Every structure is written in structure tokens, then in C-alpha cells.
Length: 125
Image 1 (tube, one colour):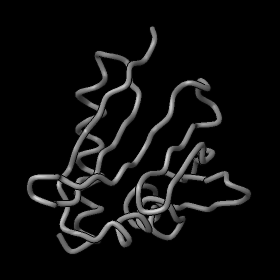
Image 2 (cartoon, rainbow, N blue to C red):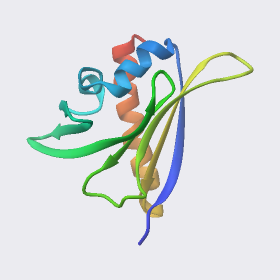
Image 3 (cartoon, rainbow, N blue to C red):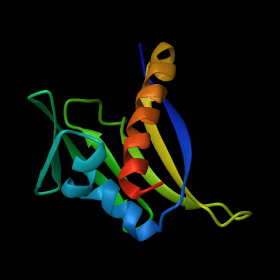
């Protein structure tokens, strides 16, 4: 069964510069995304419960977005953190794009929601 792209949006009270550090560096990602994060040669090593998954940075633009691709996953699937600004309220919006099977999107969304709450706690939101 093929996975489909889904998008989540989270308003955040934080400057894009600080938020991008939490989305794009081993130290920042280690605060909320994984228990342990290392990076070598554009490959990030994410550790949970003693096992590691590797993801490469496919594309990034400082303070705008970073896109990762799991090395064990299909080449056309990725997860992305994007920083947008609401034109109406001028509020910073964290946009997460990821892939999941249709029946798993709700569970995956809840997992992201939990992780983003950790991120917001670290940011003081």
C-alpha cells in the first residue's frame, strides 16, 4: 500500500531563527524529536530506545525549511519542517509534512502533536 503526503500546522510563539535551530541541528532535534541525534556528512542519526535510523538532508534553506529522507525509505518520501508566517496575524507557523498509509495518518498526526508539544515546552510556549 502506498503512503500519502499529509500536512500539519502548529502556530508557535518563537522567532524563525530560534525555531530553525530546533529543527535542523543535532542539539535542537535532540531536545524534542529523538532521544539521541548525531550528524555526519549531511546524514542525521536519530536514536530511540537504543536503535538508530538514518536520514539525509535532501534540501534546506536557513530559517525557512529543512527536508529529510529516511535512508531505508522510498526515494520519493520525506518529512519536512517548514517555517511560515501568517499574512493576517504575522504569527510564525510550523508546518510539518510527512508520509503515512491512509489508515495510519490519524495515529501519526497524534504522534507529531505529542512531539511538537515537547518542542513547544523547550521553546517556552
